[in-house]
Image 1 (cartoon, rainbow, N blue to C red):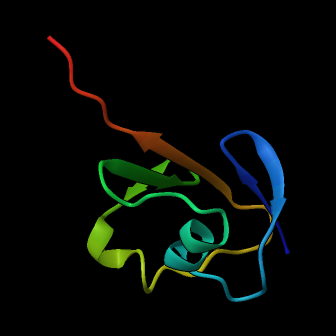
Image 2: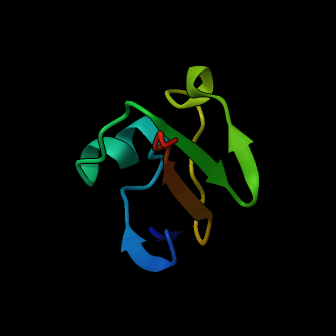
Length: 66
């Protein structure tokens, strides 16, 4: 199925979860936040949050600075 990942059209298998998406595209899980359709999804929900056709997913990496 088609989703939008960080502004780009991408394909994922039907029934894919956020965890599956991260694995499929080799996205490191440490220090990230994931938003689906403008709502932040807590890390504890990544394994059970199923994506749907045309979902908009944003993955943001946290960086430190000073």
